[in-house]
Length: 112
Image 1 (cartoon, rainbow, N blue to C red):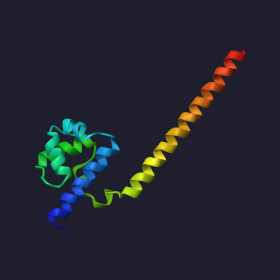
Image 2: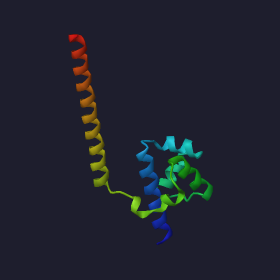
Image 3: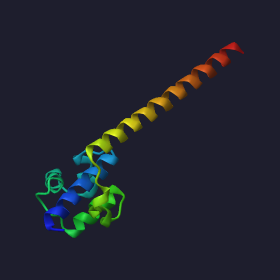
C-alpha cells in the first residue's frame, strides 16, 4: 500500500466519521483545533497531517487514531444512501408512533 492509498483511506474515513456526527468541515476543524482550509486539504488528500493533528482529529471524532486508517471503514455511496433511508424511515415511524400515542392519551384525558 502506497502513500496515496493511505491518503485516500484517511480522507474517506475522516469524511465518513464527520458525516456520522452530522458535522460540517467547520465543526470538525473547530473541535480539532485546525483551520477549515487545512481540513479540506486533508479530506481531498492534498495535505498530510502531523501526528498531533491526527490525534486531535481522532479525539474530536471520538475514535482511536488507527481507525482513521482502516480501509474497511470506507463505505460506498449505495450503502450510505441505504443507511440514510433507514434512519429516515425509523425516525418517521418513531415520530408517528409518538404522535399517535399522544393523540390517544389526549383523547382519553378529555373523556374523563
